Length: 492
Image (tube, rainbow, N blue to C red; front, top):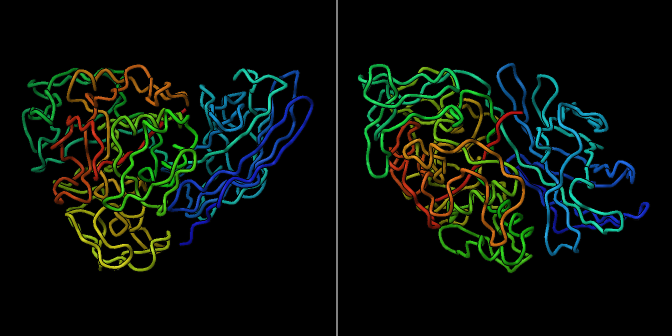
């Protein structure tokens, strides 16, 4: 399907009262489903309330809401008071569902759900349904006074959106009872998966009924407990539907300071990585392709900037398996059948498809024929079509894509004390001066406390199994050709 991408920023200057606002239409964000924000404008500026209304249209394809779960767009606003030299994260006025002063617009009925930190909002269908979303004149109320913007400022504003999937509260199993590398199991029987039925602390050890796994250098210490505040996946959360794309990452770089961007720029040309340019005009020639060469520091910087957070390895298994009873050695789509992608059809402009019969995963160092050829990551969500099933699209239980293969996922591990100290705090939209995330109890730039799950385009298929923990506590602090990133947010 064809993506619609803005060729650049279009500026609109408004002088209302003493405030001057410049609105910059964002580059299309969520890639595989044509998520687009347009017609950004300003209204209802209140000097007394120090608020302003940011209005925009939003659209995307292949949306759904059922009694089980739904997709959503995480929408946030960045503003600049120095003509784009630096960008700050806007704070919304009120939290809650459809808060006073906000407008749901017209078109597809969407709810606006603003978390308590007010760093953005989820837009999601108000009722069960499926198909394309097209909603105009949505209005967020920006508390510019809370952000320290004064009435004489000239302000540039950008609106960003990232496609997410809601993962509901439910019990689920970790481990499959299979032969994966050091999977979770219920001690002492390795063929019994472990049921997580609450967010309470989990005892880890060799006591009957405990969660356990075989320890190892890159696997973890098999110690505990896993504290109550560590996000276990039982409570509801939202996960990015796709890995961070190369287009998304380029957009992120362009809103940093020059110093921050220099720290975060991968600067690679190999293995189908296409981000190039100079600050503040980085771009990706294949913006829909999953972004490789991301270090752990890059992943968490993006999460902090977007007011999201890293996932945990327990949340990873929940998203892939859902409430299903595990199948031993299963992949994210719930069975053990896997077919390697080889042939790409079409120009890789976001409309390309995989023509290998039955292919549902990118793994095993395939050298592609067609398209741009070569080895490396594919377009986000490339296996999904209008007629695909969970298995043929390679989707997890809830509709999250590419959890097995393409690029390593980078969760927080339960396998060491640093990982277990993670409390699930969200980013606040602001990095430190050098471009690093600075959120309490997140694993830092050395990647101790992080790990790798879900396999990737380079390694063999066994790494892509849902419960395989070969590198579950592997630090992997450098940028690598098969490292990607994906973020989550706890449900408000």
